[in-house]
Amino acid sequence: MKKELIAKIGLFAGGVLFGTAGVKVLSSKDAKKAYTHCTAAALRAKDCVVKTATTIQENAEDILAEAKQINEERDANEERNSFEADETIVE
Image (cartoon, rainbow, N blue to C red):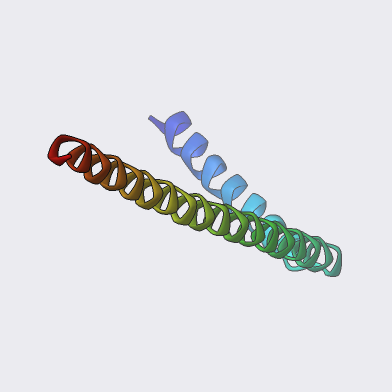
């Protein structure tokens, strides 16, 4: 029982020591510099993703507009062909 208590106290003390050292490392100037560089890289990546998404959206809009134009031309041709067929039957 005493050994278990001593082991638990040792683990707790080790955790506190490790946590304290971790906080000091994470709050150091070098760590801050690393965080700043990582954040800058993340912002560059975000800009790249936004630019790519915008390009994809513009291309999709162009494709949609061209598809609508194709369908309008097709409908007009079908209507014209139908009208010419009706004229042939009447004559």
